[in-house]
Image 1 (cartoon, rainbow, N blue to C red):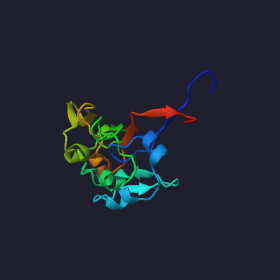
Image 2: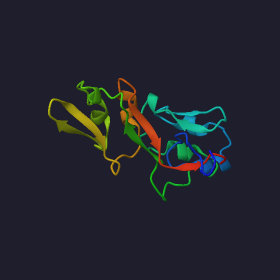
Image 3: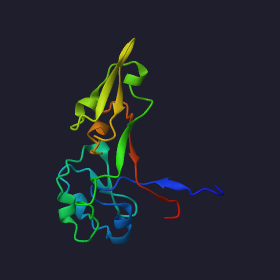
Length: 158
């Protein structure tokens, strides 16, 4: 792509860690993954921690950050835990006129509301200012229609 700054989507890193701190400091030891009581952190092909919301949700307990001996989890005081939010995809049952509110029922922050409509079941909307990115809505979706969307981006050569 000439004349454009290509961007790539980042993997979901554990809470309070950012791509730059993982790249600069993570040793790939796996202590964060071993410490996670929800068992949602695993190491990717480069031995870097990623979150797998298909296994469950993040409860923001901080065990991963406490287990890390290097400065990977540097954002606990500075900003939100995650640099992503969720998005409801087109394959959503409610968007295909089937009654389903599993994602909204699972959301601890009530960040997914269902807008009533005539002639069909209510459709989900994500309230971005309420979504913490915990992933509680991801694993419960029976058709995998909840996507995690990064809000942090880096150049393709980064």
